[in-house]
Length: 303
Image (tube, rainbow, N blue to C red; front, side, top):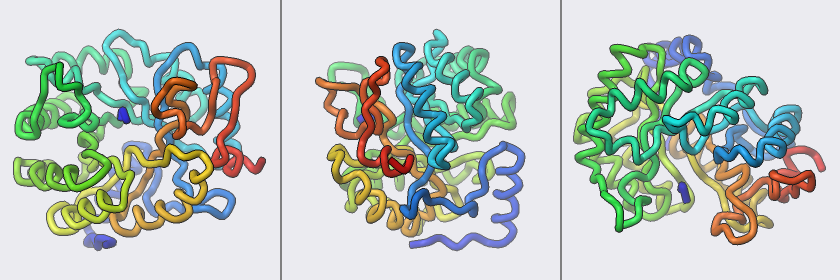
C-alpha cells in the first residue's frame, strides 16, 4: 500500500498544546467518535484530477456528519498535480497533510526540492510528511534508500524547515505497517538522531495494519520516543464487510497503546476494479455520477 499509554510532563503538554494552537491543528484531547464507533475523522486521499466530482461530494457528506476533519494527500509533486485536491480541501475547511514523495528524497539538493514544492503548496499546507515506507515500498528495480541515509536527509530537512519555514510541522516517514520491521526501523531512527529534533515540531508517522506491528512499535515508542506525538498515517482493512468491526475493535487499541492522536483510514479511494487496494475504499467510482459507498462509509453517514 502506498502504501501503553505514554505519560507526558505537564510542561511538555503545555508546550505541545501551544504548538497545536499556533499551527492550527486540532487539540489531541478533543473527543472523537462518530455514530457510537471510535472513528478518527482523518482519511488518506489519492490525488487524481479525474475524481474531483466524487471527492467534492464525499468531503461534504463526511464533514457534515462529523466524520471528516482532515486528509493526508498521497503525494505533493513539484508539477502541481495535487493542487486541485489541495484547493478543494482548503475550500472544504479540511486540515491537510502533504506527503513529500519518496522519489524527491533522492534529490542531492533536497532543500531546493522543498523550496520548489513549497512554492506551490505552502502555506495552504503547513504539515508535511517526508517519505512513506521509504525503505520497503520502492520496487527493487529502482534506486533504494536505507534508514541510515534517510536519517541523514531528515536532519538536513529539519534544519532547512526550522530556518526557512518555522511554522511547518514535520511528520517522519511512515514505518512499515505489518510485522516487526517497522519497529526495528523506528528504533534505529531514534539512535540516528531523531531524538535531537524538537517534539514541538516533529510528529512520529507510522502505518499500522496488524497487531504485531502495533505491539512492537508501541514498545519502541514507550521506551525510546515517549515525548513525541504519534499520528498513524495509514490503517484499515481490505475486506469491506469488516471495515466497521475493524474500527470498533482495533482503533481503541491503537489509541491506547500508542497514545495516537490521529488515525488516517487508508483510503477514501484507492482505485476500482483491477486495483489491489480496492477493498480498502470508502467510496468507489468517484469519477462518475454513480458513486458507490462501503459499509463503513454508510455507517459514518447514517445510511
